[in-house]
Length: 199
Image 1 (spheres, rainbow, N blue to C red):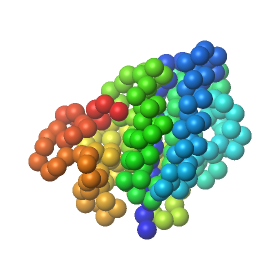
Image 2 (image 1 turned 180 degrees about the vertical axis):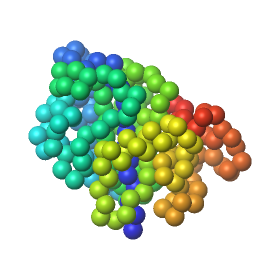
Image 3 (image 1 turned 30 degrees about the vertical axis):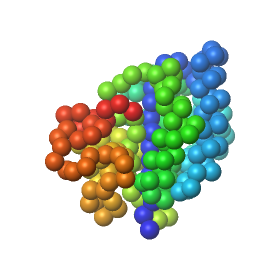
């Protein structure tokens, strides 16, 4: 049975190594959110670096998740001292469990404060796609699909919760979110160019 891959990406206002209170707060809340999400029904796994050093993303050992990669629009540092981004790559059993984990509880509270930590951008901040059972998505997969989502409308190859697709490529709708029909253009959650609106 296919699994849902979810890649998230955001550019932080300050480098991860910044000793300021906002960065520390982001880290502290992030650790609590990860613990909670890992216990959520439908959660399967997420990319974690073997060494796990704070701020060590580029050059870290990510195992089967592949070499760390970022979208072309990321223009900040790549070293431990200058990296200013947050990215996640995870696997889920289905759309609904992933949606519920992201938009409820501690993660919802963190989303409500995202502009304290993250720069505002016109780029999408997440993308979903289906992978076959047993396949581990790579960071590069996530980047390619996020860039595709930015450049094109959501499609079976790269989609959002609000404009989602089933594993067979047919449009899907998570109950209580997204468009009620395929007639609305622009569709809920995107602008005219298909970029995800809001967060």
